[in-house]
Picture 1: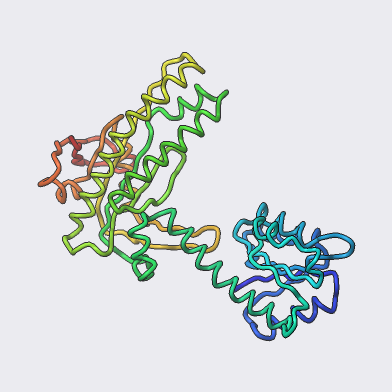
Picture 2: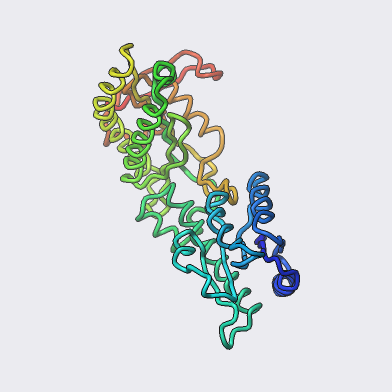
Amino acid sequence: MPKILIVDDDSDTLKTLSENLQLRHQDWKIHTAEHHSQALEVLTSAVKIRQPFDVVVTDLWMGRELGGEILVLEVSKIDPHLVAILYTAQIEMLDRYKLLEAGAYDVIERNRPGLRFPDEIDFRVRTALIQRDRMQTVSMLSRFFDTNLLNRIQADPSLIRLSQRLVTVVSWDIRGFTTLCETLKAYPDEIADFLREYCDVAASAIFEQSGVLDKFIGDGVMAIFCVPSRASDEGMSDAIAAVEAAKALRSRFEPLLTKWLPRWRKKEPKQIDIGLGCGIHTGDMLVGALGSGLRDQFTALGPRVNFTFRVESKAEKGQILLSASTNELVKHQIPTRLVPDKGDLKGITGSFEFYEVL
């Protein structure tokens, strides 16, 4: 349900625009404010309670100041997804390009000949909502998918509908990262810059194999391999792609350490010992896009996802461990060796077979 905020110090204009939009769009939530400072309070509060507005429509000149311009300049700091539309009867007071560069979606000259102002506002708001939805969808999806797969999904959105599928999930974690953070606690930028580069490298390795980047969890990364357009081969292609992505990230992690270790030692002479552990598991899982607004996410759900994390917890530095189900799919193309485990697996007792990628 779209939320619209109209801002104008003229009560008649506020009433005309709000009633016109509400009459035409009864499912919209129309709010009003009489000053840019009041509007900023309303927008900020909405973001805090996770019920943000979609569009703000504001007069440029309010009272004796350019309240609309101030509002637009502040809006992007409050909510980068909010669409701002300005209007004015004093076009000579308007720096159109400044406002557009600041993030305004559109600027309307109120007294243009032949223009019926309420109709024009309605048209611009509807257009803005359509464009906003498209931009949000692309923005959300681009965080998870490589460009080629994203193009296919945009052509057929049903590909990411939540459903039960045979999926291969990969989980990575940096061993020794907590100790690293403690060692370099006086240099948080060193940790943040390393993580940023590590995440970029991880995303590239995943996307190169048409995987889906599920999430970053501190120093952990989770990826899903379930490309819908692949031929039905009972998950073999996805499992192989997952292992190839894991191998690629393993090979790229060492040069990353070679680059960063000397920098860290200049800051802190203590011994720093970190490495990448990886676990991979294949099984039927609930996977697809879920959430809304600020919480949109493409992810996999269920106990088999948790089992992937348990497999990863057994991996040592530099090790890629596969569950038996994943190994069965890749063993004819990827060399592995049996690594039996007879201990407790984070609360699950019993004997498990793991396979290490050579």
